[in-house]
Image (tube, rainbow over all chains, first blue to last red):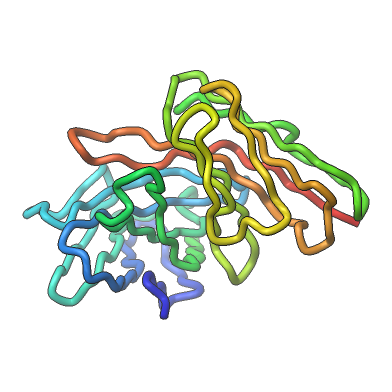
Length: 118
Length: 115
C-alpha cells in the first residue's frame, strides 16, 4: 500500500491565485515528519517546507504553507499568489520515527505537476 | 546550498559497461543517499551511507554497489550497466533543520542513458 498518496497527477492555476496540492499519508508511528519538494523542469530537487507530527502550528515558508490535518492524515501544500516560476513537479515525502537510525530514509509520493497560467 | 556536486552530469554508455557516478559534498555531512528517479515510480532509494565505509542497501539495490572511503565522496557503481538502469540519479545528504528535525538536500542529478 502506498504510504504517501498524491491524488492529483496534474493541476492548473492562474497566476496570482492560490493553489492547494494534496498529500495523504499512512503511518502507525506517532512521531514523523512531512516534507514538500519542488522539481522544476531543470531537474533539481528543491526542499520547500517541513512539518513535524508534534508541531501544533502549520508550517509556513514565505508563500508556501502546509495545511496539516493529523486526524485525516493529510499534509496539503498551499501556494499563495502563484507565480509562473512555480510551474514544476511537487513531491510530498515522509520520514517515520522508525527511520531515525542509520537509514533515515524518506518515503516519497509520485508527485503532482503544477502549471501556472499567465 | 548544501554543497553537493555530482559527476558526470550526463552519460551515455553501452549495455555491459561498468559505470561509476560520483557524489561530492563539502560540508562534512554524515548521511548520504543515492536515489534513482523514473516516471511513474517517483524517487527510489538505491543505497545509503551513515559514515565512512558504512553503507547499506535501499529498496532497489540490485545491480548497484557503493563505496565511501572519505566523508565527502559517495560513489555509485553499476557493475554491468543494463537498459533498465537508464534513469536520473540523485545524490542527497541529510542536514538538520533545527533540533532533531532534519531534511534531505539533493545534488543536481546525473542523467544516465544505457544503450
